[in-house]
Length: 292
Image (tube, rainbow, N blue to C red; front, side):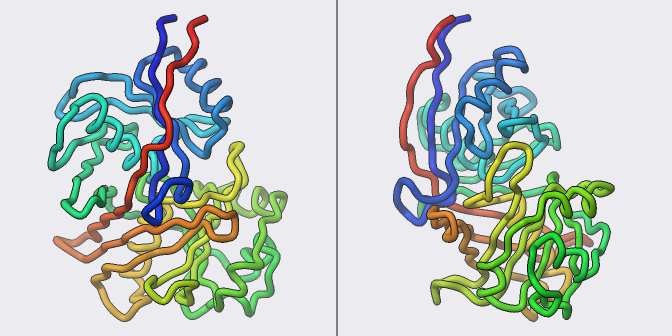
């Protein structure tokens, strides 16, 4: 096998390296089994492979792998991979590019202020769970869940159970009982609970989020674009912030030492909720995969 270039970037940073969510991006199209091995070797929450060095159907072909399984969509890999494509393949500033993923074509735009933005697929709102069920999964009391709003499965390509919490303290103390998670979520599409509240660590931010996805070989996620896109849609659908149009800042990753910042926009338009998720990307390292 010929050598493959790879890049390590941090996505949804707070403006500096070693914050946000780590991503490895490979340029090449090795066999799927090797892609999975490389994702396991790197052991980030996701690793991507840009399998076309020129657009096909207007977009670049990309595959996304968690350490144990390939996935159809994930948020921070979209922005991080678009950043690498613009910098290393296109080699010049562009206003936007498109990624061809298993869920369809996802556009990414490059703003003048350095933010990258993705438009996610329209949300689907699924099964509603009881506070008792999620209290068992999260090891919290039922009263620590904000039952004014539904606990609901939401997807824009990857499904999460969205859980509004009563306080920042409750968000901080939650931890997942994997046996209860598998027993309760096993019949549903959602891979993990995404818990959030309107109490934040920084006064500049609007919501505090944790995604407790210690499954498929990934620990708690420091910054989850897919889950935050679902949360943005949920906030509009259920009028959580008192409006059917939002432009907010979401903080995540603080409990695991990877502070992250995600910009969320969502609004109703033409009978659906339009979602945009934005953030900053920092280049950390690059190298070549050693030849066999």
